[in-house]
Length: 304
Ligand SMILES: Nc1ncnc2c1ncn2[C@@H]1O[C@H](COP(=O)(O)OP(=O)(O)OP(=O)(O)O)[C@@H](O)[C@H]1O
Ligand SMILES: O=P(O)(O)OC[C@H]1O[C@H](OP(=O)(O)OP(=O)(O)O)[C@H](O)[C@@H]1O
Ligand SMILES: [Mg+2]
Image (cartoon, rainbow, N blue to C red; front, top):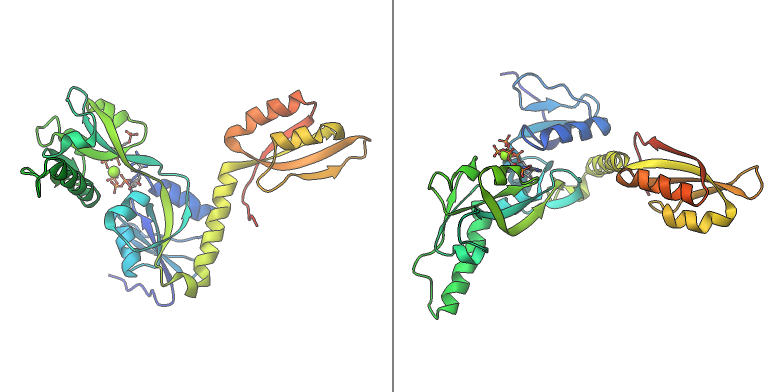
């Protein structure tokens, strides 16, 4: 194998496949972190920064960052919690949003996690789930005046297709991620408790952050890409008498930029608006007499 010289490069752990991969690739592109990845090689040197991208399973990234095998990385908060990894969360990225839920067959009598004490639970999150059920076991024992329960809950690790385990008779319930609920409903399961909510995060080894200005630069660039993805720029003209109303509708991220127009009694406003709210904002502005309302995409941003 060709020798890859990683000396003096910041190592950046990237999910190599799965739900987070595509969006992370978009972030890297937006942040202008260029690289060339050879087929089937999991380390790619950036061509315009002293960075090496290390493509890893999302589940391993938190531990790699905590151990200092890579300096920074992107993975889910669920993965950080499961690994019990000591990492610094630099930035929540706003994608990979889902919940880790206890799920039971819809035709089962289980209505809460407590009902599953002494039963069999299948999950890919055996460390987190083990802790949850250890506590529930202890509570059940205490309530019964015992030192410990006779039948401790059995938490069984499965690396994938966890939702099939109830139908296969392997488990009484499962703990797995839920986003749309499609997978859960297709397996005739329903959520009876949420253990945590999660999204993708940029993480860093706690000892590396303060010493490496490149980490701060990457964070700022990624932050800019996220703002640009989330917001649009709205400009409009409005009678000065309606300015207070207009500011209520478009308060902006910090404050709107307001400038006087040549036409007497009118002002021009330029303001950032959440993309998801843009159509409602345009309706509301029109109602108060605003004119020439334009919404434009933001390509990149740096906020104060
Ligand atoms: N349905 C989902 N919706 C949103 N985010 C999700 C979803 N499933 C997983 N994630 C997030 O993505 C992270 C990585 O999960 P993913 O399933 O992509 O990895 P994987 O299991 O290694 O890949 P694959 O499923 O391709 O084998 C999870 O830890 C979670 O944070
Ligand atoms: O609520 P939903 O929108 O259906 O999403 C939840 C599913 O997404 C993930 O699976 P993934 O697609 O990563 O497949 P996997 O089970 O092979 O990991 C997760 O493990 C759930 O099964
Ligand atoms: Mg998966």
